[in-house]
Length: 239
Image (spheres, rainbow, N blue to C red):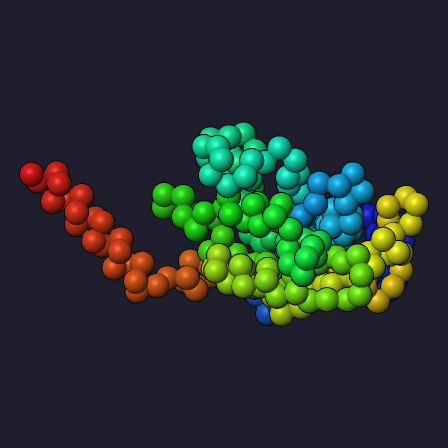
């Protein structure tokens, strides 16, 4: 867990760690909420990565366990087999996570190809496992110019397509190059405070969904598909 001393922008008296009891849940979590964070730039000084690192510090201070995926070396979708080490790493992290944070720069009014490639490598289903369905998601973006919401809106569409519970709050940081100091730490600002809000909300929703995801995503069409597949296997064995 990160120390609040590593969060110089935080007013300690006002900082809250989301807890199960405060959300009306009967018991505390068996383990820390597991959150995977993805960013969308390979630049040496990537502001989407710096925002993700700030978010990860906050999540750890709120009691979560975090993993940040490094997209360097990830091949373009379908250019390699799924056994490629970076693809296998990403898919394993997606299965491990209970929630995710996606943060992309805005480029030409949209998310970057690097961001989209990561999401495209995560399938809706891996055999009987659905790596994203029923899991929580927070979306964020950074911009080089004035504030925009193009990228977070696109990420929301993708989150719904991946059958994730995308939380209401979001973060958009304009002129991101002005929001970080020489040590690559985010300066105090309303933009930083919004990231705190988003991470707090993500942890709360992750705790609320925990243990309920299977019931929430139990669908007639999928039950029907599973029954048909089982019947086909039984018939095949009988031949």
